[in-house]
Amino acid sequence: MSPRHKKNKDSVPLYENDAEKKLHINAMYLLALNMEISIDEVKTLYEIVLKRLKKNSKIREFLPLLASKRVEYLLNVREILREKSKRHKPS
Image (cartoon, rainbow, N blue to C red; front, top):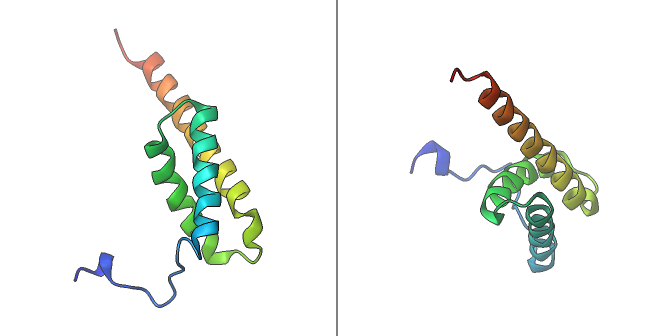
């Protein structure tokens, strides 16, 4: 097994139970709907952000909000950078 796939004893499960999973999936769908992008784009980034937030979180009830806000910010930054690169390309 490669090091990337080894289980880390400090790793935190992404979802503790089905209710938590549904909560996060709903947050992903709302974000995708509001930003008019695919759920796949949101899900990939959301799960990365969620995993990082969970490592240090004490109050898990705020994770959907925190993860959603961070993903929204990152997607907005990505869009701004795309627009800048389009403007600076020579014709």
